[in-house]
Length: 117
Image 1 (cartoon, rainbow, N blue to C red):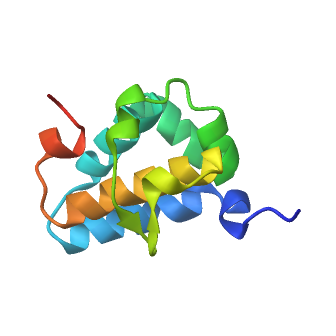
Image 2: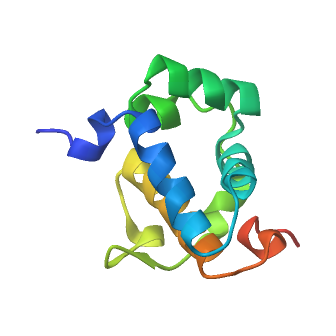
């Protein structure tokens, strides 16, 4: 079976799109970075390293140091698909990030985005 095209895209090519989406709605790069760190467990230096290495998106998620268990609380629709119903694990992680950036762009507070109790 052929891999979805997004798996082979570099994280470095997607990252500016995530930032642009947030900034277009008045949010910041640092908030996008905070979301990525929360979701994946990467430090800021490790994120920068992944960008320099041109790591593909699949590897970026598969090698994430610590996928936050609270990510399972992320619910909703991205690209017409409910994130909680996605069966393929890597695609679900990608869509979790998409959903969090959507929430950021819609003005949700960081404590709600990061599922803080």
